Length: 70
Image: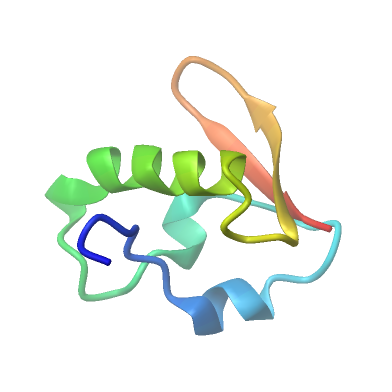
């Protein structure tokens, strides 16, 4: 899938349940920082559409989204 986010599944799997995290905590190390904004929105959309069944949006503000593993 070409339009998937650049999440490091190993990092995501290491996040403890009920622990808030941000996109920057689980993005691949080799993904360019200048592309994080667009890719972070892509990750948010994936979470909203259930791609990661154990991840939900925890808190959201204008400039920050926190997620939580269930």
